[in-house]
Structures are given as C-alpha cells and as structure tokens.
Image (cartoon, rainbow, N blue to C red):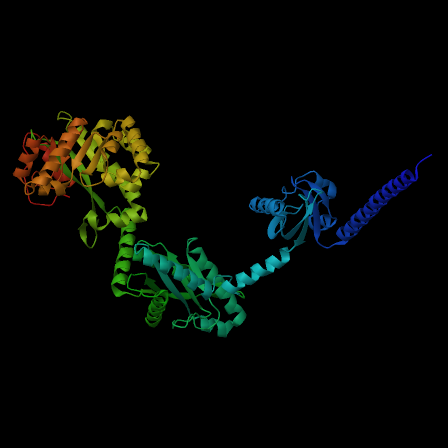
Length: 615
C-alpha cells in the first residue's frame, strides 16, 4: 500500500498535468480565435494586409490585393515581396524592413508598386512586428493603403499652383523662381549669361472684342504652343491671366496677352535677338478661327543679364520697358533694353544674313599669299586666304566675319568651297607650269570643319577631281583647334596623312599644347605666329622662344614656317636661327589668282617686297 504522503504527491502531480493540458488547450483555443479573428479582419478590410517573414517571403496576402492590384494569392505566392515594387523604391522598402527587424519598430512609408496591368500605384505602408517565443522579430504584418488618387490630386494641385490654367505654361510664380535661380547663378559666375524676353501680342484686344473671349482663349493657347516650339528644353516660357503684381518690388504685370521667356546660357546678344525673330515669325503665321483667318504679330522686349543688375526683378522690368518701346514704335518689332547691345545684336544678325546671301551669290574670293624658301628666295607654295567681296562694302577681311560664320555653322560650307577652289587653282598651276619645282597649296581648317565627318571625303574628292598629288596639298589648323579635342585631332590627322595630305600646326608658340601632345599629332610643319616674329628683334626673350620652337621642330623632324616677315632683318634673323620657310609682305601680299599667276610666270625672279598687309 502507498503511504499517505505518496498518495498526496501522486494526486498533486495529476493535478499539475491536468492543469498543463488545460492551459495548452486554452492557449490553442485563444490562438485559433486570434487566427480566426485575423482572417475575418484581413479578408474584409479595404486595405491590403500582408504577412511576410524576415527573408521577404509572402506568408499571407489579403483578398484586397486581388481587388486593388489584380494579383491572385497564387500569383503573389510565386514571387518575392519586393518583385512588384518599383526599382527606384526597392532599397527604401528593404531598408525599412531591416530597421523593423533590428529595432522591432515598423515605420510608415510610401512606395510605388506595379499593378497586374502594368501601371504603377502608390501605396502608403505601415508595418508592425510579430515576435517568436524567444522574443525575436519573426514576421512583419504590413498594412498597405492605395493612395494613388490622393497623390494625383496633390500633384494636380501642385502643378496648378505653378502653371497657367488656360495654356498649361508656367505661371509668374514658377517663372520668377527660375529667374531668381539664374540670377543667383550669374552672381557666382558672371560669365554665365541669360536673357529675358517680354512678348506682347499686338492687336489681341481687337480679336477679343470682335470674335469673343472664347476665340481669344484659342489664340492665346495657340500662341503659347508656338512660343514653346521656338525654345530649347532648358528655356522657359510663362503666361499669367491676371493683373496681380509679380512682386512687392516689381512694377511689371503679366496680362492675358503677354508672355515672358527666360533664355538660359546665351553666348551673344544676337542669340536672344535670333530667338525673338523666330518668335515673331511663328506668331505671324495665320490662325483659323471659326473659318476665319486671323493674323497677329508680337512686340518683343529683350533684356540681357549684366553684373550691374542688383535684383532678378530688374531684368524683367527692363524687358518690359523694351517691349513697350517696341510697341510705341509701331509694334511687330523687337527692341533690346540697352541701345549699344541692340545695335550690336542687329549688326550681327545683318552680318549673318549677308553671309548666307554671299554663299548663294558666290561673293567669296580666294587670295593667295606666297610661301618662300628663305635660303633660295623662291616661291614654294601659297596659303589660300578667304576674302569676301561685298557688293556694297567692297573687300571684307575674314577677321570681321569668321566668328559669325563659325558660330552659325556657315563656315563649314564656306570652308568646303575654299578647299575646292584652292585645289582647282593648284591643279591649273601644276598643268600650266609642269617644269617648275613642286608647288604646294595650304588651306586653313576651322574647328567645325575639323569635326565635320565629311571632311576626309571632301579632301579626297577635291584632290582627285583636280589631279593633284596629295603631298602638294597641306591643311592648316591652329593650336587652339588641335587642343580642343586631342583624341579627335589625332584620329583626323592620321586619316589625312593616310591620304598623303600634309598637316601644318598654325600659331605655334602662342597656345597651350604640350610637347607630348605635339608628338602624338602627325603634323609635318609648324608655323611661328606673326606676333612672335614681330617682337623677336626688339625683345631678347621672344627671340629665345622663336629659337626654341625652331630647335624643337627640327628635333621632331618638322619643317618651320614663319608668318608676318615684314623686313629683311626679320628674314635674316630667322634664316640664321635655321627657319626654312616664311611668308609676309616683305615678299608679297595676299594676291588674287591673276597676280599670283604673274608671280609664277617669272619663275627665275625673286619676289619683291611691298607694303600691303598680308593676312
């Protein structure tokens, strides 16, 4: 028989086991109720609820995912929790999950997720953690709310606060913000220039009164579209449909028929004038309203950034003042606020128009400056120099038009003509004087020509068309052009050398080319700049530089040509230093084709000095 104390102990153990079983049963019932409750809540919730583990695997997705994003539970179970998230937002979501795992505290965030149809929805997400028996975070419960429509409404509100309701263009608020940014930038970097254009539509009031406000709105919308088409992506055109002041200190107001334009990064006043002319041409195109043809014009005021302006608003006031002046002078014209700038801008545009006319009407001529062997005094070749015979102004030096031709890209066409004409003339001389020593022709290349992919083919065609030995054509580039893009220079020069054409580096000694780069360029001659030649007799240091250039060139097996030889003393000093060739008005000025031909006829005579400028 069991002792009494044994009976008591056995009964106690039985009660303890029964308690544990009851506790386990109770906990199971509670867990089942919680799971049932969780299922009831999640399956009926409007928001999407997900349960994921710490590796990002989906453990559960509520039915709302199907309704909102189009994915079935089976489709979601086949992918990770981040696969549908926008690539730009994934790091943000993963960082939030990592922080929740480490801190045990979830955070609220917004991210984009792909709908099954391919569109993107914006979700607002809040996460909470579930810990395991050890107290460690084991799962995340994520509640996602679709806020796409709310975000779109916010974006529309934001857009409307910065854009004109009628045209969709930036309004005065956005325009002034961008103007202030450019003003601040120019204060830090004065070389960064910009301009403001004030555009006033002429006769808009009459259109409004005659055809009605609805037609007037159509005109404004169409003009806004045309103005936008005239600009680059970095420029800004703005419009305001009210008469409220633009700022407390700003007198200017933008009316319904007035636009402002901000031109970023302009190099010259003529750039702004060119845009203004383009705008006027676009506005002047007829509009068709209610089967009626309506014509408008625009008065444009231009103000250019300067270091004298103290506030961004000043530029807008100046542009408006210039527009008012254009209006007062009859409208349909553009005015620059500063008279001097206006005259320069107009002159530049007139020059560009004259250049285009000159190309069409063949007003250009080639003059030829002899290149002389300093030892034998014989002509060994010519440098082809461009001249413009203007019908009203006579012969115009290239110094007055080359920059404009280069900026507008016209110099490529002009340079192509110069190359063809020079090769044609050389071909004639080689045929006419077959017994004289080989005669070379040097033709200058501009930066745009050098970068033109058609250059090699143009050179090949010019040489073949005129039966010229390629070695008797030499193309000349300045040190500045060569160093603008050393890799391109090396490539193009190598291609020209394969054709057999020679390369001369002009203005040597005044630029910044390194000796290492010089060795990489396959040139056969260098030209000593006329400035160095002109100063070498009066300045010992300059003379040393000239001597150094000649010595360096000989070390590299290059020929040396000196420009600007004006006196016999220049010639004698250069010859003593070892310079082989020279040009300048000691020998001859730049001659037209007939005069150069007469020079060649007297093959045995030495060229005589004269006093005309060579180049």
